[in-house]
Amino acid sequence: QVQLVESGGGLVQAGGSLRLSCAYSGRTSRTIGWFRQAPGKEREFVVGITWSGGWKQYADSVKDRFTISRDNANNTVYLQMSSLKPEDTAVYYCAAGPGISLSASSYDAWGQGTQVTVSS
Image (tube, rainbow, N blue to C red; front, side, top):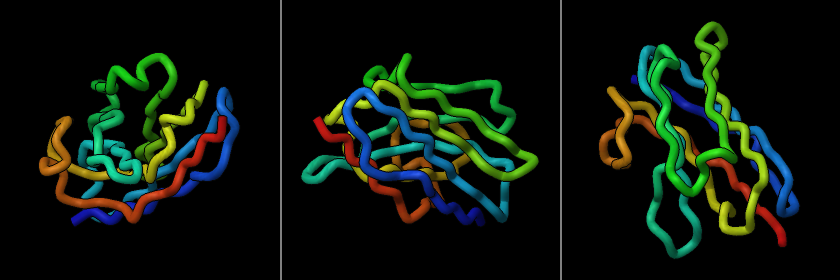
């Protein structure tokens, strides 16, 4: 089993940047995905990265603005978010699974989430 803890959320103005972190422990050789959920909306895939870091997949809505990376020595995955927009406002979750998937049901361990709010 994998345990995940997100951090780094907060309030930022449109056009600003934030870096989220996902610290993981337990069964660590897993793909990590970031999802987000805005009020009244379904949870949506943001980006995923394999254990080796050799494969990354981004949602079209964040491509060229968000960057995912991982430091396996420190068991942490980072999500650097730039050029933030009000529509990026959501609770951001990291999750662990056997491979990159756009479907939340493919991930079997989740963090508690961290709130990101982008003001206009």
